[in-house]
Length: 601
Image 1 (cartoon, one colour):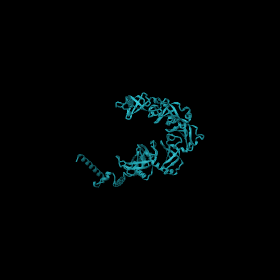
Image 2 (cartoon, rainbow, N blue to C red):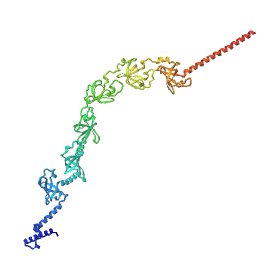
Image 3 (cartoon, rainbow, N blue to C red):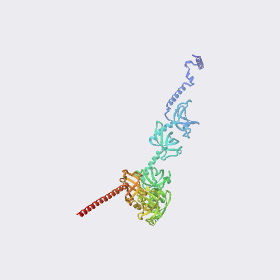
Image 4 (spheres, one colour):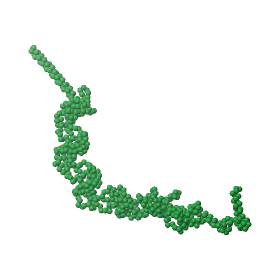
C-alpha cells in the first residue's frame, strides 16, 4: 500500500473516532448513512421514492412522441417549457419564428431533442413536433384531397418553395396557374390555397398545386357554360392567346377560336393589329362540334356587313377609288369602302393582249381609280377595270392601221409559226414565219429576230371583229424571185460552190447569196468518175425552178453529159450525110450505064 493511501485511511479512522466520541455511542450501532447523506431514515426513504418516480418519468419521455408543454419563461434566445418533467425543457426561439406572438402561458407541442446536455439541461424541439404533425396532416390532406393553405417562402429553380403545415413543399411553375406565369416574384410572401398532388415518403418530398384548384373550378364552369351554348349567342371573353391564324378566347373555362377572317370585315395581316393579350371582348358563337369541344367564334359578325352600307347609287360603269389591299398574279383586290373589295383582273389592267402579272401594274397600298364592270350586291361581289379609263385602241383601228400601211413595232414574243409584234399598247399583229424573208429558209422566228427588237412591218389583213392583225415584213421589199425566175431558168448553167455535202446531196451557193440550190446525190458525179466535194466550185445546170416554193434544183453531171450528147448527135448527122452521098453516086452510075447501053444499040 502506498504512503498516500495509508495517510488517507488514518485520516478517515481518526475522523470516525472523533465522531463516535462526540456521539457517545457504540461504533456498531452508529447510523453512518444518515451521517454521510445528512438525511435521517425517513428523509432517505422519501428521496428514494422520488428518485424512482423521476426515473419512471424519464423512461416515459419517448423521443419519437409529441408532448404538450406550457411556456413558463421567455429569454432573449430561448423559451422555457414545462412538460411536467423533473426539469423544465429549453427550446430555441428560432423555432418560433413563424409565431411572432408567442407568450408565457402558451401551450406548445414539443419532442425530446436531448435528455441532458453538458449542463444536465433537457433540450426540447418544437420544430420536430411540428414536422411530425405536419407529415400526418400532409398525408391526410393528400388522401382526402383536402385543400390546404400554404405560405410561399421563396422562388427556386423551376418553381416556388411553399410552407405547408411547417413542411417545405415544392410548387412547380406550371402548377401555379392555368395561364403561363412570367413574373414568379409576385407570389413570394403570399398565402394561397393548394392541393397536395404528390408525396415521396422516402425522400420526404411534397408537391403541391394551385392550378389543380383552378382547373377543378374551371371544369365545373365549363360544364355549365357548354350546356348553355347556342349558335348566335353573344358572350364576354378574354383574349388568351394570339396566333398568326387567329385568336383563342377564354369564355370562363371554355376556349373558343376566332379565325383571322372573322376578326374584321376588312383584311388584316395579323390578329395583333386588332386585339391584344388579356383584352376583354364580346364574341358571337358561329359554330361548334357535337361535344362542343371546338367552338368557332366571331367579332366582325357583331357589326353590320359593310356591303349593307355601300352607297346604293354605285352602278356598273361608275368610277370608284380605292386602295390595293391584296395582290396576286391574276389580279388585285381593291378596297373601295371599309370591308368592301373589288377585283381588278390582270386582263382588265391594260388593253395589251400580252398576259402579265398584276405586280407589273400596281402594288399593295396604291391608291387607284377604276371602273365598275360588274356588281352583285346579293353575292357581295364586284369586278373593276383600269384599262377602261383609256380609249380602246381598236375603236379607230381601220383609220390608224389600214391594209397596206407600213409601221414600226416591237417584237413581243415568238411562236413556232410566227412573231407577235406590238404596234401600240393593246394592238398586236402576227407575222407568219413565211412572211419574214423572201429568201431565207427560217425554221424558228428566233433565227431572224429577237424579243424587244423593232421591226418594220406592213399590214396585210385586218379583222376588226376578231381584233386580229396580219402583218408582213418581207413585203416591204421587192420579191427577188421575180428576177431569179429568168436568171435561173431550167437549162441554164451557173458556177456555184458546194456549201455542204451530205448523203442525199449537196447545198449549192451561187453568186446571189440569197439563192441556195439543191443538188441530188446522183447529180454530183464528175466526168472523171469522182464526186463533187464540200467547198468545191464547179458548174451546175438548173434542172428545176419553183418560184412559189423558192426551190432550185441543179445538177453537175448534166453539164458534161449534155456535151457528150451533143457530140454523139453531130457524129450521127455526119454519118447520115456520107450515107446519102454514096447512094447518090450509085444512082448516077446506074443511069450513065443505061444511057450508054441505049446508045450502043
